[in-house]
Image (cartoon, rainbow, N blue to C red; front, side):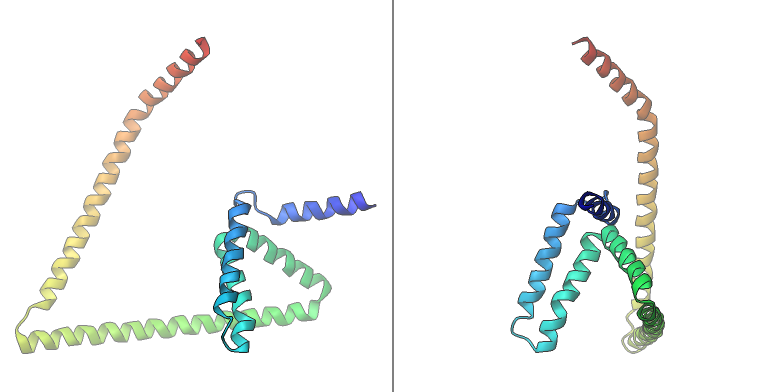
Length: 185
């Protein structure tokens, strides 16, 4: 009986831990980040001491072990759906409200960014009118230079890719010959 249950738990852990992610350094980084959050919150208010370590744990886990964190979140969500359906429903509602709030914040920042850009353009125009400096031309030249540099970089990348494609057959031939030489030794 113990063997069957332990095998079940090992299989469950294997399904949560992502094989593409190196677990050892990831867990160490998550632990260090969590302890750092605890140290930073040490002499703060009680609420900060209570919230900062778990937040730093979750944020660092999502950063250093994203696939494993996602798998664990999915597993815990399925357990929540199975064992606590009422709580899972409220959790889904909270997620929807958080998503809507996030979208409203993004829309608000987009509007604020547009207002800042408009005020910057009007400020540049006023400076040009009062001083006679041609700031708009400087900005246009900088943008033109930026576009030309990006085009040059794209052209160099394309030429490099063509050169690599031209050399690939020769490299494969050299590898093939090296393999034959190693077999003879």
